[in-house]
Length: 187
Image 1 (cartoon, one colour):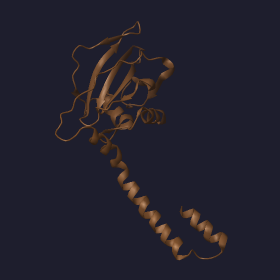
Image 2 (cartoon, helix red, strand yellow):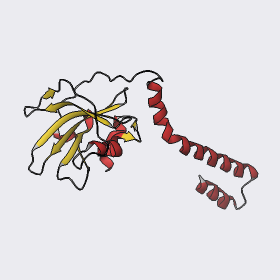
Image 3 (tube, helix red, strand yellow):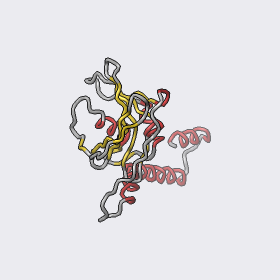
């Protein structure tokens, strides 16, 4: 916007009028207000979904299709781990309960592979394992999965990395699966 005013001033060969200066000041004020409130937009959206005083309730989980190689997005977790990790971009779901659910494929240096369907609660920094993949391309559903805190987890724990880099903004889930996919592909 600043460049527009400078360009206008140069092309007309005269100083900006009082009204142009005033418009520029208002634009800066609006721009500052937008930048200050931007981080709270996602938080406010999530907080409206769970009214004060109501207990959080997890939604029923629907298993995704088994991951296909062309849908896997390689991710960077830590330079200290020898494992590689990939997320199935088509499996990412941002639930109304505030849980980010996704399929992750972890590979060891020896090419052993673990496939799992998991969830991350950004607000509490917890994870849950819903199902593990079988060699025949089907899911083995866990009978009683539980939420486990992952904050300060060890080197091979990808949950903290996924939460910080791809799925959570502070303690609020990203807006949608498209945004999560965008963040995964950028890094």
